[in-house]
Image (cartoon, rainbow, N blue to C red):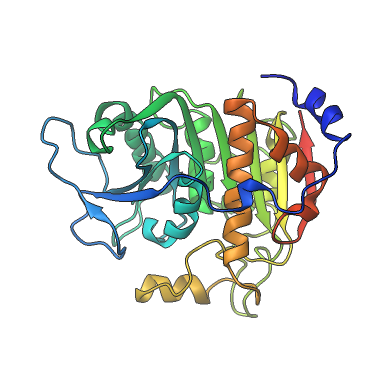
Length: 331
C-alpha cells in the first residue's frame, strides 16, 4: 500500500466532500445468521445449526455477511461487559454493508466469566473461524482469513487488545485492531484480568495498525452514587497512549459509552445498559454511522490501500456525522 503520508499530500490538493461514502449505508445487503443460539434477543435473523460436518463454535454467535458473491475480510467483534451481541446489530449491519464478514460471539451467559476466561474464549472463537465459518456463509461468499481483524467495545475492546497482545492461546494472525471505548476496569487500582495496561507510552507489543474510538461522556458519572462506565486512567486515552504507530484516536465528544448500541434495548440487561451510563441527548443513529464509518475507513486504508476516506476524517473531522474531538494519527 502507498504510504498514508504520501496520500495525505495528494489529498490536501482536493476539496473535502461533506458526506463521505463510509458514513452512508454500503452497497452490500447484510444477512444475519444466528449459530447455535437457541434463545436470542435478536429478530430478523436466520438460525443455522444444520452444518454437522463442521465443528460447533465454542460460544453462540451471530454472523453478519454480505449475500453478494465475493471474498470479504473478516472481523471478530467482542461485546461489552454483560451485554448481548444482538445489542449491536444496527452498528454491525452497517459495517457489514461495506463488504465485511463479522463474527460476533456471545461470550457472557447468566454469570459473566472472569477476565482471563473471557479472553481465552475469544481466542477459541478466533481458532474456530478457519475451521467452521465457511459452512455457515451463503453460497459463493468466501472469507479472506488473511485479513482477519479484531474489534471490540468496552470490556470487549480490552478483550480485543488482549487477544492481539497474545494473552489467549489462539494461533491466528490479525491484520488490524479497533477498540471502541475500551475499558480495563473501574479504576487504575481495580482492573480486570489480565492486566494489559502498563501505563507506559507506546508499550503495547503490537505490530498491527490500531484505531481507538473514545466517547466524551464515558468518563462522566451517571449520578453521585455511580462510577463512570469508562473511567479516566483505564479508558480510551490510556489504550491509545500505549499503542505504537500506526495508530489513530477519535473521540465522539457529545456521546456516551453505550450510544453506539441499538435503540430501544429490551430485557433487564437492555434496561441496565441504558440506565447505568451517561448517555447523549442526541440520536444514536449518527453515532453508529460515525463509529461504523471510522471502522470501515480505517480497515479499507490498511487492508485495501483505499486510504482517501480515512485521511479525510483525520484531516477534516467535521465531515463526520457527529462532533469528533482530539483526533490524533501517528503513522
